[in-house]
Image (tube, rainbow, N blue to C red; front, side, top):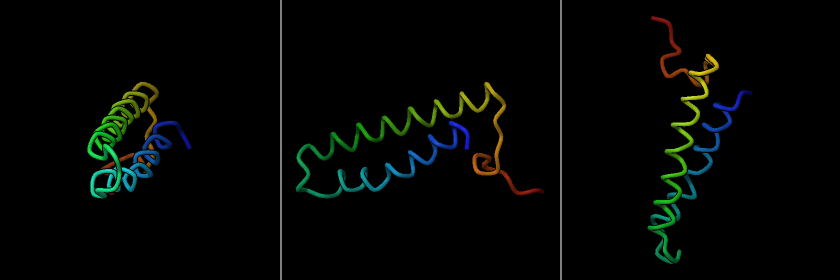
Length: 69
């Protein structure tokens, strides 16, 4: 598994933490934590795209249009 795919999996793992921080009122500063998680996820999305393009890493997992037409 290449680094861009690992970063994609990290973003998927961050989703529940984002939702808890955003929706549970008992989390102190939850909205700010959700913003931080969103920024981290956005940066990993940008980074994995740049790495994949730079090293021409194309996988079915990372290819949005992996179905043949």
